[in-house]
Amino acid sequence: MDKIGKYEIIREIGRGATSTVYLALDTFYNQQVALKLFDLDALHDSNRAKAYRKQLLTEASLAGKLSHPHIVSVFDAVMDGGVNYVVMEYVEGETLEHYASVDRLLPMGAVAEIAYKCCKALEYAQHQGVIHRDIKPANILFFGQSDIKISDFGAAVILNQQITQVSGVGSPAYMSPEQVDEKPLTHQTDIYSLGVTMFQLLTGKLPFEASNNYGLIYQIMNVEAQPASTFRAAIPPELDAIILRAMQKDLSRRYQTWDEFAHDLVDFLSTKKVLAQPEMFDTEKFDTVRSLAFFKDFSDVELWEVLHVGHWCTVPSGQRILSEGAEGRTFFILASGEVNVLKQGRLLSQLHKGDCFGEMAHLSEHGFRRTTDVEARTDVTLIEIDADVLEKATPGCRSRFDGAFLRLLVKRLDVANTRISHLLND
Image (cartoon, rainbow, N blue to C red; front, top):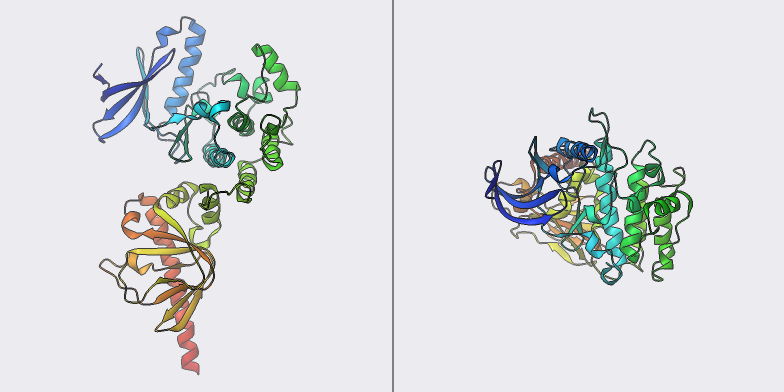
């Protein structure tokens, strides 16, 4: 097979009972995509085929709807009788199912960071009116050091949409009690499933196991899960508590919001026992930029982009960061600490957490020479951004930076005018 629709087939990359996934080329945009071709004839049960087609329509309806760095984008879909396929973003990696066995477990910190990114992605989906309904390791793609993308929204509930939702879908081992009971679902069902996913990624076991689905459903409805540390003694009480709260059967005791869930993960990742490495987790970086005044108008999606274009570094107290007269194309945002701005050795100002400096290198169209010295007054953490790299960011992200720079310039002009006024009065 050389072509499906307008897409040139490169090679087969996966196969299931009812679908085949190909690596394909979108010749219009000259980009590689994943094309999932469905074979509904393989489903001999007409009722099952009808339900499955509804799932395909659900996934197809999400084309262009969910745009988040941790959700696989759906670009195109064709549901046309004998030809049914969905075209998605191609992610070169594997699913977390690969790391859900005892001999391949990821570090605890990596699992917590993955869960945090899932929280932010599923919170975004919730705000778009989408509940996934089938969160499990097999539906989370893993690549790089700790990057993830959630896939397979075929079982999703899409609020305020006319498509009839299919009941009884999802993977039983990861279903919440209310999903098993076929009650109306909210985002809290995904919170539960993410708790089960964390449990399995940390221990290599599911919290509930039985010889058949009836026994499994009984346990999900009636038996309290044991702490994950029962099966992996190194898991600390704080992480046990997070998983058990996510998996509470009583909705009032389960996490009420994704933000609550994410906040507890940040607290856990901030503890010294987890941070055995000098590098900050993306989780902590995201939480930091979200708290900075400079980024107050940025959406979560744009903040994740900031993390990809920015380089984080620490500078000890007393060390010079910028030198007067030096050329440069980078600017800096203070993630923590304070710096002194000096002109010919004289202190001009002090900048604090959330302040920006060096931005004229970005705003200038030509080569720019620094007009002041900047040195660390305390130990500082900096987000360094190269103006040339920023130019390759999305228009939305660049626009947010332009707005932030405009507020910054207005603030500095106001301060300068106040100083001039005081000098004139003196």
